[in-house]
Image (tube, rainbow, N blue to C red; front, top):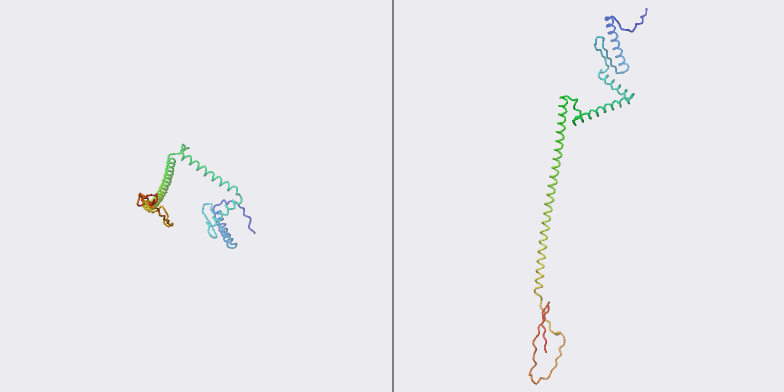
Length: 244
């Protein structure tokens, strides 16, 4: 006689149910092992009994099988429904923006009625840390500005010293030039105070001289000589001799 068809339903007898579970579980694990070996498949099996006992099987590692399953399922879900993923990201960003706006209003002293003592203390600590950070940043900016001003001041002092050095050199050159000009002026003054004297006669000494004899006068025995006449010019003195 052939075996009759077994009706698939819950076995009421607990002993028969436990025996059937043990046999069927062993067969299922055997089939999974055969599937992984024959087809080079990665198989994972998890079974919980009615009493809550765990039975599992994995061809490589149950954790790697579960991670691979979750990744493939997530990728498949994104490919099948990309709009839902975008909506989820938008909703997450909206929550973040709402939380930031709420924190900002609380830091500005608004909407504090719904906070308890612990939340107010946490808010006070956040404000103190924020204020400390602002003060540190302010002090750092002031220190940097003071350093920059000191550098500019030292640079200006160096430029001022260089200008003073150049001015002193120019003054020395001016004094030397003034001394040269004064010495040249004294030489020219000495030359103008002692002009050279030249003597000029009333006639050209190189011209021919013509002599005339005159008869003696009855009342005078010899010609009278007139006095010499001297004349001076502005640049040179000339002595003029005239005979009458």
